[in-house]
Image 1 (tube, rainbow, N blue to C red):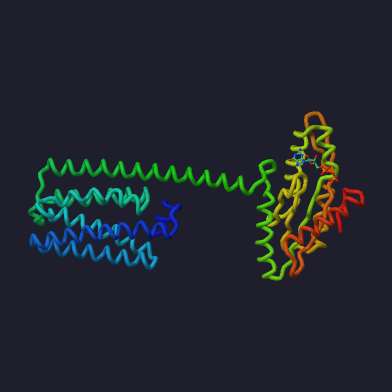
Image 2: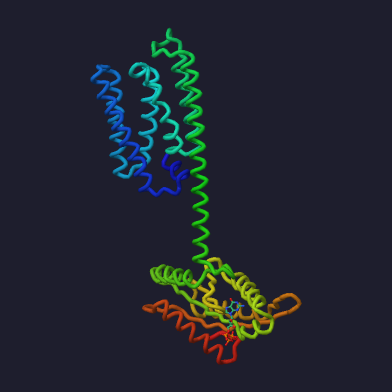
Length: 348
Ligand SMILES: Nc1nc2c(ncn2[C@@H]2O[C@H](COP(=O)(O)OP(=O)(O)OP(=O)(O)O)[C@@H](O)[C@H]2O)c(=O)[nH]1
């Protein structure tokens, strides 16, 4: 059942689930205890015992939540509630008012079990309740209700179940919407809006994670810092939109050249950082050369213009005791060297 709760209420962390279930348990425990006490004063022994047993079950459910076993507590709540309701309908409770309580079953079922399982349980519950009420007295003696009462009880229970299911459905829809909005905001915070690559902040976080992971396994990590050559002149000659198109198309080209486990990020305006886990600087040199030559051989088309660009690349491998800032500074120095040595080249 915990799986169901997680599936239908994925927004609820374990602690929130625990809080709701413990609230259900507390309310159930208090109400059944109070009703049990009233029943005791009214000297209805069977009902008193059933209500105190129910109260004890809710207490157990509350204690299980405290031990973070939400699944067991949810099972206890739901199935002890069903049993209590069956008994109240069967016995009639106090002055035939027992069936009045069945309405709480609808919202609790769909909330705890989720929409689909909740509705199925409600249908089975209604079937059992109807079977009890319509069972011939000759078979087993039980509380007798008028046909008008039974039919109205069933219809009002169906209405209540429908409204509970509708409410749960709308609640899930608005949750999914909220989740989608939060996912989009997360994307905005982590992605570069133009190229859709990881942005600088995201790349820095990935680098820190990879550093921790790879150093634990004593594996190498290299980066390529790529910068477009004379990109200003592309903007000046063809316009800023052409420049944007170049950046976008090269982003795709870079991504095609690297492995799934690598990360291409937009580091700055016309600067890209490629993170290469489990890669030495020698291996990174081979990848860098492949990327450099693919850019050189790629012709970009913007309206009627054919645009040719080149890139310079600085390579750096993370050494023991080096920080990420030092790694990037090192790559930046190599990139500077590549630029001063004539551009369209890889350094070292
Ligand atoms: N179209 C476009 N241009 C950008 C963007 N970000 C930065 N730039 C441009 O990139 C150019 C970078 O120019 P510079 O720093 O002088 O470098 P460069 O012209 O590439 O020269 P070198 O790097 O020395 O080869 C500037 O003209 C920026 O306006 C962007 O998102 N879109």
